[in-house]
Image (tube, rainbow, N blue to C red; front, side):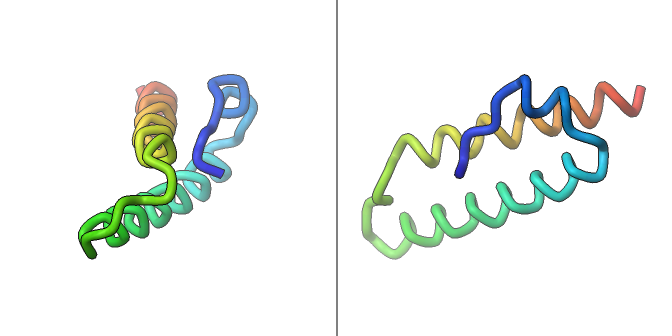
Length: 66
């Protein structure tokens, strides 16, 4: 599952955010590997959704640190 909504992010604790970020980064790594091997990813929308979800989580983490 690549998409993480803002509501989900707002309700997550800091530890859960870190765990979900690691999962999404691993998923993005797999999508990039699939793409680099010459094949098209099975779902191009997943690539975009994964990147955006990572950005949302990083934004939330950084806003909590300030």
